[in-house]
Image: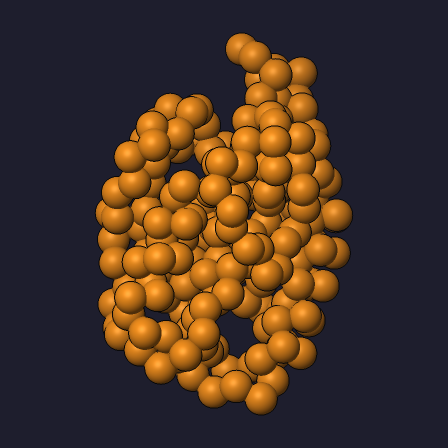
Length: 185
């Protein structure tokens, strides 16, 4: 029998808990149920996870969508290893199959300024999907510079740099089971 992971030693780490693992699990289940209801009469549903930040959210969300779905991934970045967006959007990996005529749900970890996800949605719309929707675990409205419609939102958060549950600081802490915010070194 596998043992549970050991708790993080928060006294030595530069972050504090913002959203608990339990709250995330509850909300992800609710979002999966809502997507299931909304897409129950649709065929050809493709869920596209935005690498790397959405992977954990996508894995949990997909298990709560009680429909046949295709999973795809796209890599897009405007951060690199920084904690502030560079403003330059780069596709680092594209989807492997055409999405024309399919119902697409883009799964993102966070909508911050909106520049990156806006660019991505516009790019995907040129590929002529039947529909396109956005699911985001987190939204920071205080930083939003572009209007982006989030169809399935997990949590609205304050303007703090967050880590965990897929989100990183210089590629670390994605495996933190909760959402934490950086407090300093």
